[in-house]
View (tube, rainbow, N blue to C red):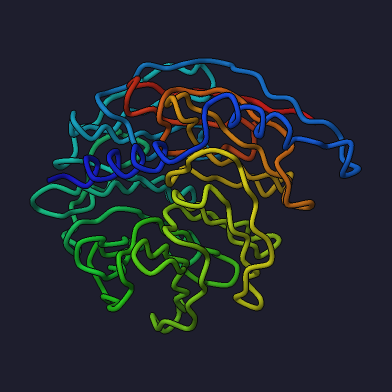
Length: 342
């Protein structure tokens, strides 16, 4: 069974346990009490809804080229979107069951995990929109992250309990890090060269030293963490939990949880950070499956706004240069484009 099928089922299970839709909506609308916390009010608006391939899941943006990349699980393709026009400008065939994607903006290369037989990473040239290499990794690669400073790529191999380390210079696996439970989401802080891996089974985040490829800490965050995002400027890590409906905030300095933010919605792995304004975007669903993005202030650790998106949203990304937020819906086969202002 493909990982996407497991992911969608898990998301549905999490949503089924929520409070009734009316109560969830009330909680979400009550949460953005910006004035009560002394903040400027935030409002979000929909810019576009883009039809992509079949069952888009992960998503990533290249801020230098203003291009967005979306793996379509059931099409075995990656859709390439122009952030300027919000139009699909190319469709790149990759491996079977592409699930997540990450970008190295320094070299304009894109990396997509292929979860079905083969268990590979497709390396895409952002200049030609073609696959230039295919790298075999561990069994069941889910999340993927890039450190643009070291040109290392990390895949969370969910069915094997490992993290593969790929050299971006040679497109080969140079290390395999064991004993990371059921790894799913993964993120990198390029400033500290630390990697953060969500372990769904043990309710923790595994912290890896990128220089030594050694596990240096395990941080308990909840019940079923899935998504991870990092703000390199503040050295804070944000982890979504699809059971507790919270976003845990980890201090990268102390490897401790400093806050837990209740979004009032079921969450999957869609979480993104804009370091330019210290804002976090977490994609979730109400009990009826309607999608919503919770906008979180990184300074106050509170939800300051919400915005509707497609049903059962999965991935989330932000372009820090333009401020545009992108959220995939595997059910609607779309990408929602939002902007938020304070």
